[in-house]
Length: 164
Picture 1: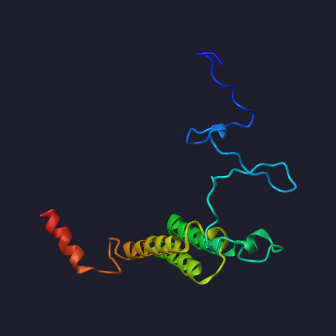
Picture 2: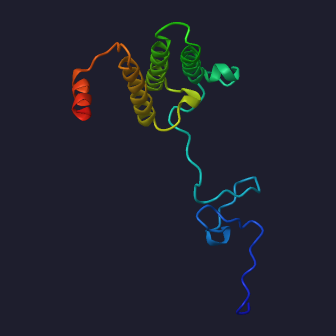
Picture 3: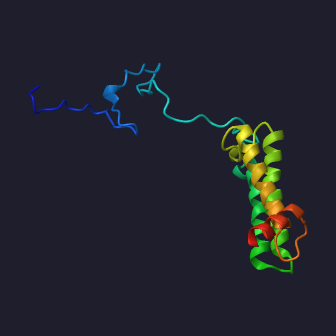
């Protein structure tokens, strides 16, 4: 090689997200009975715990994903109620339905061993995220003005303190 030339990259050397090329990595061991080479370093994430099918593999796709679909249907009903506003306090009821759907998602994630695509992260993170967001939506919708269904006295005092 001369001073101004660079080594010619191999056919399978593709740059990765970290800027490495396949030539920089140790060679992968070939798989038995196949010609496909797998990387020696894992570059993908594992499926979340409980991320398997919620029903047997021969069931239809909606049946395999019933936990996620039940949460999405409830959220959709709450959004529809908020959007159409069929009665006076419909926005509040719709938001309570949305928050309750997230809380139900947290309960499903906690109790069922496999919840399909409802499992996004680890079980603890999913339960915490669904639970905190669902509880926050329910509490904020109950405290929304005008005529809140839930009065929290120290919040009213905090607002008066900051306004004065």
